[in-house]
Length: 464
Ligand code: SF4
Ligand code: SF4
Image 1 (cartoon, rainbow, N blue to C red):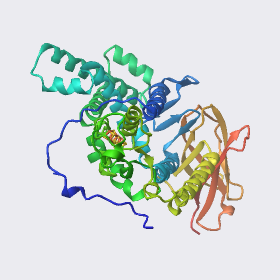
Image 2 (cartoon, rainbow, N blue to C red):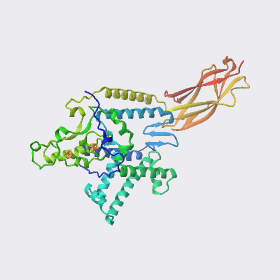
Image 3 (cartoon, rainbow, N blue to C red):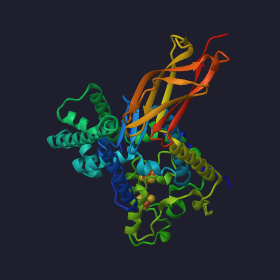
Image 4 (cartoon, rainbow, N blue to C red):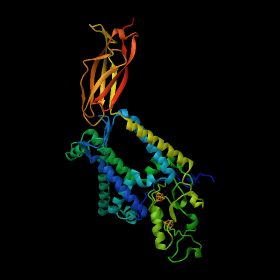
């Protein structure tokens, strides 16, 4: 069996340049709606709640860009940890590929912020302007005070949600408690004001006005997802063998006796679709797998006394009467790659030493002969204590006989702090039989807990 899914040539039936038709989404109750609602409540609670959690007098999750430190609960990531961030992004990408091969676009339908915020905005629209038919009627009406009030209430609430979203988002980059105090005092800095304004308008525009157009025209994931689909990927699909021929009929009439299938052509599945498509036309790239049409059709089937599942989560294989295969080479490949990268990420994170040493040789003079006849080299050191505790360290030098640190400093660095200082190293001339030697400087935590970093540098002497 060819494992490619059939594609409909939409360019022949669509006018690609037609004006955008406003979609009046009808909200529907049902199993998948409840699932999505519960999931979104958890996600909103995490998004709005996490920046308010404090730990040891500091915001638990704070991406402090000016200080170039990312605090994530017990760990602080520094620019030196960029590799971990890269691996985290790669893991996230492979997790998305893995889930997509199994379950299609469920990320889009259930957890994508664009979908989650759109559903909040639809709910506000319904509370202020009424249900779908009332909204269509309201838009068709000429201007009136009531219409103005309803529309104003909707936009004010949309902007309020947009503002709360934006302020919370900025609160991940700027201490959120200070930010909200500044907001209350109307004393925001220029950058805070700019970003809160920008993200307020972005949320308002994306979830209120653009909605499905973000998914259809702007989201790159929608473009490449089809590459990951195969005939065993879970998709939302209408069963034409059972539904056709579609047509209206009275309740209680056996459709087979009048040459009809189970679809009563009520259009409810189209009315609830947030992207405005008719799933009965087959799999389309606009479908975000939200299953609103499944809930809608199941409610119709229930009223008609038919079995649910005319529209359902299924696979192309199932629809063709072939058993769906769960383990496929592509899925196994993504799974193995993901596990390997997660293991590497975990090992790197585990071996991460919260201490950094930078050495820069003094550029003014290569070396100096002291009054005692020793060779002296100078270095500028920068030590970063990347832990959450104040620490004491000692410095040691090796790589050359009788190499010593002149007036070795006591090194006390506060949590998350950096110390810059200069040192002089001395070695007897007898230790140098070549003009340049590689030496090593080590910083060790006191008392010794095994946390140590060692960096190499050069020691120069006279040319004989
Ligand atoms: S909701 Fe079900 S019955 Fe109604 S049009 Fe859609 S597929 Fe047919
Ligand atoms: S066709 Fe169904 S699953 Fe797909 S986006 Fe529309 S309502 Fe959601």
